[in-house]
Length: 135
Image 1 (tube, rainbow, N blue to C red):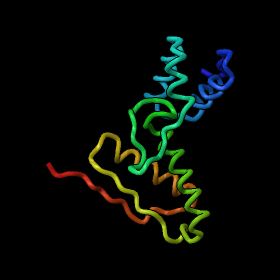
Image 2 (image 1 turned 180 degrees about the vertical axis):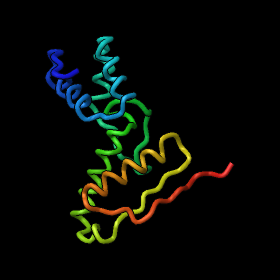
Image 3 (image 1 turned 135 degrees about the vertical axis):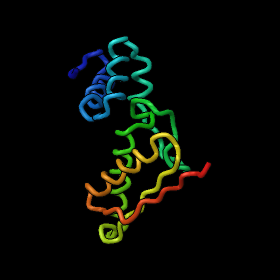
């Protein structure tokens, strides 16, 4: 499914972009379902704004779209952070990063995706820290 034409060029572009870039079957299916249902208001809400990185990191509802927590947003955010780190700390490729995760849903998966993004931009993972709560 591509080359959407809803007569809203910005939304058309974001839908095409999402369907091209998102490799997660579940979140792809969410966007395809909203498109099939002609739920354009929801598509605008999740695709035309971005989840912001706050003082506590990324926080949000887990579902499809740039305004939600999902694989693609984690990858893109990690790529942006890695790019910034490379320019702000020229020795980051030598120093590396430690990626942490905890017991929250998808936390470990997101840590793996973040690691892949950093490594693909030349910044090695030098450690992984699990902060899982003991119950």
